[in-house]
Length: 231
Image 1 (spheres, one colour):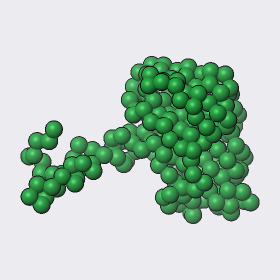
Image 2 (cartoon, rainbow, N blue to C red):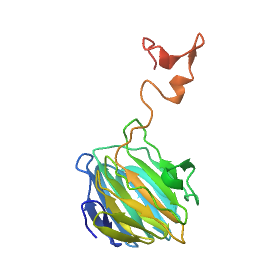
Image 3 (cartoon, one colour):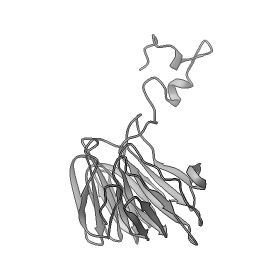
């Protein structure tokens, strides 16, 4: 379904959708066959079903259902199925994680929870999240200032927009355009969703990060001493 507020996609193999023009991003998916992506990009991936082999500049790694990764330059994934979100002209850390937990660790709106799976390396960088919706959720309608991209991992629910209601089941891929009005609902089933943000208003900066914050100079955090030259 395509609408100004929510786009859903059935599972496919290859390029799915060009996304947020303010933070050039492409949603890709793979389904058993090998998917190879390369370029001056960072890649954020999630294994939605089965087992996959991820090959990067760092080597080959076997990933199980519910695992996720970020990598750069050139990636190939094969086996199972999942999504890869390409952020153009960006560089991430190479990281592997998961499988995701049953629920999020942070509070979210209307009784939902969230876990930050791949956090921003620096303030403003992309991030990957797990959203958990308990049964019986009826969210407040809301928007986001940038695209939200991802897939339903487990459970079922629906998304309500001004244009109508979109059913959500495992494997539903989606794009919520910037400022798209929407709300999620569940009835008798919990639902887990993987959501990518192309930007964030959170993360370390040169002026504040754990190392500099907890470096003390005569009892004062080095983050409070702008004249201090740190290596």
